Image (cartoon, rainbow, N blue to C red; front, side, top):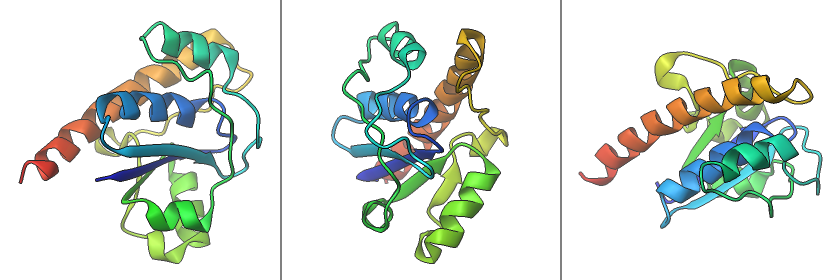
Length: 146
């Protein structure tokens, strides 16, 4: 797993937080994020930046970008936030089927969008993102050690 793409809708809340966590844990991997309806060029949400800073990870330099054919082709693994996003990526990029999974796939949960919903919503979403990231990191570690 050398190239991981994390996807949400706007690419300013959930996927930048997940990208930051995964990149910090896998410094030798190429970890990027994108949005299905990205707010292209916008920075990560201020609350997302603050919560990540509390974890010692800066996403201040993040700028939203739109998902692309190239990004999906390069990715070994594409992590999305919910079932609808998984379906959207697989329908848009048929070849990606089989490498698109929810971040919380193993706990069978969707991660709600905290956009404009306040700090408590961001904290709930980040808790799920952290749980999903831990599960994927364990799985990636097992696969990589074979």
